[in-house]
Image (cartoon, rainbow, N blue to C red; front, side, top):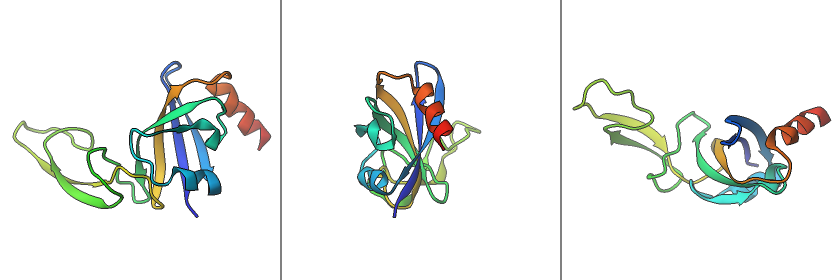
Length: 131
C-alpha cells in the first residue's frame, strides 16, 4: 500500500502544514503529476483545492517537473534547485525523480489553490487534538 506525507503550503499565512495520506487517499494520488490539482478532502481538508508543486522519493531525490515519468534519472543542469552555483561555466550531473507520483514517493509538496471555509491552522489543530 502506498503512503505519503503531504506538506501543504499556505501562502496567505506563510506557513506549511503536514498531513498523512494513507490507503485509499494515497491510492487516489497515484499517477498525478506536478501541476495537477486535487480535492483537499482526501487528506481531511474539506473545501480546499490543492496543487502539487513537487516532492521527493523514498531515497530523498527531489521530483523535477521537466522529467517525465516515475523513474530516477541523472541529468546535467547548469542552474536551478539542487545545485549550488560555484562558477558560471559549471554544469553538474544530478539525480532527480520523475514528475509523476508513484508508490516509492515519500513526500508530496502542495500549495493551496482554493481556500476552504475554515482556516488551515484550525483544521490541523483539531486533527492533532483528536489523536
